[in-house]
Image (cartoon, rainbow, N blue to C red; front, top):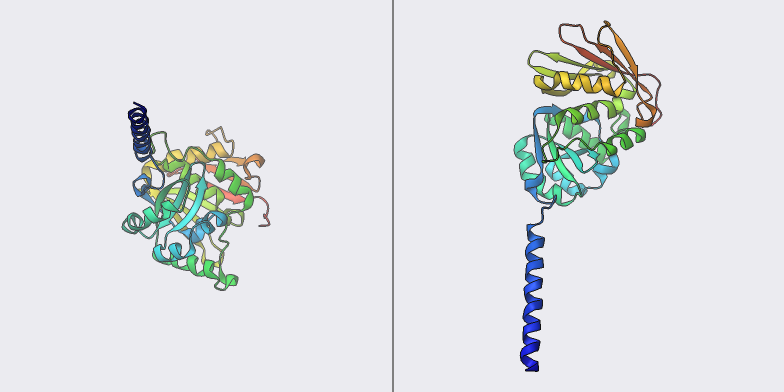
Length: 265
């Protein structure tokens, strides 16, 4: 009797452990490659939008160099990576995702040399010729707090992603950035020293109006009746060294982000 009772107890324990194991395997994990999201219709130049140094250095250096995928921003519950193209992203994302504790989103690079040069500077090439690569510390906290880059259903939200890249770019603290629509595309152009205007972000024309509206909100702009509407960035968001200039009545409504003071980074 005693031995049969012991056997029954052991069987119950085994059954419980099996059900627990099944539950664990069914639980969703951000470390699976399928959980990553690709933002189609948008491309960036990492040399102009910059990267979060702490986020980038959190990945294995060998993996970054092998994949040529650059982690750019870490948001609340999500991270943004730029890849040469979608094919390369699909190939390396599972490995990158296993090295990260948040869900990764991917955007394509405007051109390969933007990634190649960034990697050279990151590896220790001559920094005298390098543009500012790292987002300012005050901007990091602003980006890290953003929680609307992914919807509840797990779909990437392009407008907050694009505006966060614009406002947290290290170049935005040094030179003006023009955001406008040209043809069937939205474009963000950075005034990059003697090189003149350089394209930093290209995105679908359907996002131009919501991106401009988001920028208006970030700089507390309300009126659209005037030809020019100016606003200042908020200190609590680390944007106090930036000002915004909305040009709503041009043929293609535009927005200019420009530095108010020179931030020491």
